[in-house]
Every structure is written in C-alpha cells, then in structure tokens.
Amino acid sequence: KNEVEQSPQNLTAQEGEFITINCSYSVGISALHWLQQHPGGGIVSLFMLSSGKKKHGRLIATINIQEKHSSLHITASHPRDSAVYICAVRSTGNQFYFGTGTSLTVIP
Amino acid sequence: ETGVTQSPTHLIKTRGQQVTLRCSSQSGHNTVSWYQQALGQGPQFIFQYYREEENGRGNFPPRFSGLQFPNYSSELNVNALELDDSALYLCASSFLGGTGELFFGEGSRLTVL
Image (cartoon, rainbow over all chains, first blue to last red; front, top):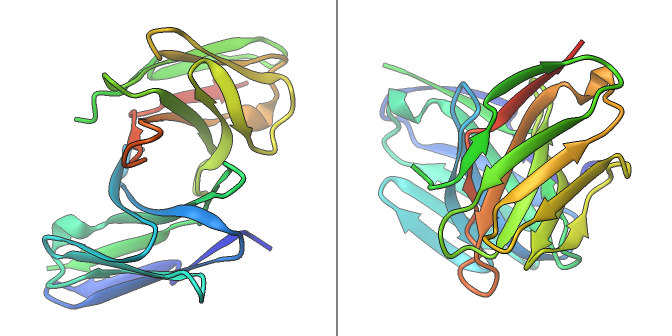
C-alpha cells in the first residue's frame, strides 16, 4: 500500500468547472505539498500546508490532520490548468512520499 | 523560474557505467533533496542533504550516493547503472527552518541502454 493515495487518477473537465483532487496519507507528517507538473517534467510547488487552508488565486488547498486528508480545489478551471497534480508529504521521519499524480485536462 | 538548475539535461549511459548529476540550489537554501521519476509514475524520494550531511533517505540501494558542497550545490552519483535506472532525476532545494517550500529544477533525463 502506498503511503500517499490520490484520486482521481485522471480527470477531464470543461472550462469553467470547479475541480477537486483528493489526497490521503497514512504516515505522520510535518508538511504536505501540492505540486504541479507540466509535460516535459518541470515541477512547480503550489502549496505547502501543515494545517488549515491556503488560497492562491483560483487554487485552494485544505488539510485535515486528524483525518489525514487533503484536497486541492481549482475554481473556474481553464485549459492552462491542464497538468499533472501531485500530492507529497514530508514525514516526521524526514522522508518524502509522493502520490502517483492526477492528470487533469481542461477542455475549452 | 525557480533558481534551481540541473545538469546535464539529458544523457545516455550503458549498463554498468557510473553517472554524476549536478544541482545548483536557489541562493540562500540550505537543503537539497533528490528524486527519481520513472515514466508515468510519481517521483520517488532518494535522499536529502542538510548542511552537507545526509539527513533523510528513501528506499534506494547504496550505489545511489550524494554530496552537498559548502555553497549548497549538490551531486547525485549512481554506480553500476541498471536499465531500471532510466528515469527523470529531479532535485529540489529548500530552506530548513523557513517555510520549507520546495523549489524544483527541470530535471536530468537519464537513459541506460
């Protein structure tokens, strides 16, 4: 069993739709990261969370430490949001564990 | 632009050879971590260096080794290359004691024939 599970694996949305990507983890963590990866490999950090909620533009990330669950929301999705979204956790033992990613395609 | 640069961007090696990949951290960052990403999969954590010492390691054999230099740049060395080592190798720098946000380089794509 993977330490980090993401769902869904693949997601297709119409432009303007509200999108949610979920992440569950099984280890004790010091931080959770949401990352965005475009074709070609480059990874961009979207959020780092240890509690609560963060918002940046149309992106919102929440975390529930008790339930070991985090969500990434995209409001008013746009074709340029098409990418792979990866959830990663830094464990209290200083290890990093990654989900397998959610491939998002936003259709105009 | 994250300020993290990796070299080389692409390279081809044959089985049994050795490879060194390099990473220049963002200015002011004291921590670097390395990841292996096979095609179609999420990254796998190899190890992390903080102030020139390894302070975290994933499930990779000892033939994966690293160094962090006083200027916080870093190397990943892989000995006795195997076909399964073909992957994108990513480094990320951060400031331990600060926000902890990760800044990734563009990666080095290694092909082992």
